[in-house]
Image 1 (cartoon, rainbow, N blue to C red):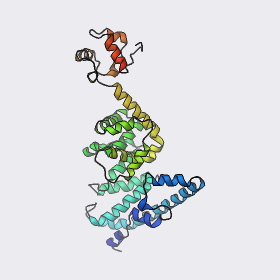
Image 2 (cartoon, helix red, strand yellow):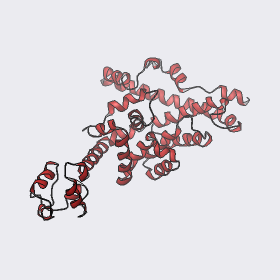
Image 3 (tube, helix red, strand yellow):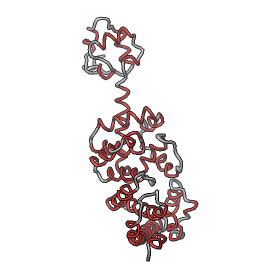
Image 4 (cartoon, rainbow, N blue to C red):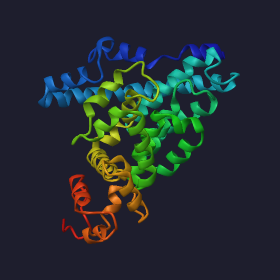
Length: 319
């Protein structure tokens, strides 16, 4: 069989699903964020268990079938030139390989998913399929923050792309790299004001994240791109979301405490006096006692009351 015939055997994941999943779901009408959730809620109990068993079995069958298809098409792909999406003959195989990688990811087979995605990324220099986003998410989901950080730093454009920044930010939080995480969070808050509102919530915004799965077109570095970045890591966030949201809340509280003195209603002359003592933010005041602040020439009780209204708690908490 020649190379063209091998490639002609490649099928898309959507096509495969349409052919094999009709007994379970109507893919043409399926809304990832709503329809599946409603379906699972409606069948409930033992019926839901049976549904999930059947769905799991179908997923396993799909993986095995797609593995065979990928294996059969691989030899022709390796022999073809040039490699990558720029070669129209390679697109069916690359799409199928991407589908298989995503099925691996959905099934928890992260290393297998990473292997296929990395190979596509290597040969398709312009990364038309967006494997970089999945690779970044997988590194973090595999608790390999160092690789995620290296990958993020490998291209300047990645460091300006919020869809790349979100996974590595999550990885930094979970790995205890606070300064790295906070740097990204600060940028997200500055560029995407809506994200700040999400961070202030008590609960992680799963509803918004799930809805982002249906977003076919989104603006670069928008709130949608941030949510999609979260969606790419749903398996991890299902267990880590409490910790992540608590971190977000703490970050915002710290930001609010670190308001610069010149951003308050304090007179410029008093700001200058305090700056001369090494006090630049409201947070800096918490290392001083009220007596020490009052001892600064030009600072009186009225200024002290203003600080109290702004939430400052002095060192000995006597105000």
